Image 1 (cartoon, rainbow, N blue to C red):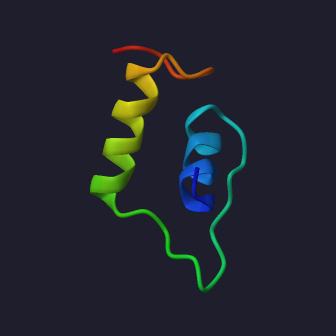
Image 2 (cartoon, rainbow, N blue to C red):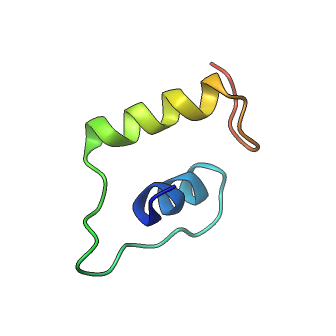
Length: 50
């Protein structure tokens, strides 16, 4: 899992993911939504199904 995705997952489950540092780029809004859908689909820990 790329660093930016892992940080967003931490944010989703209530941990402080923080921001990425260059040269890594943050996830776009569409990438965040796609990651959230994927995490829900695989019943990832800390992610609620809605």
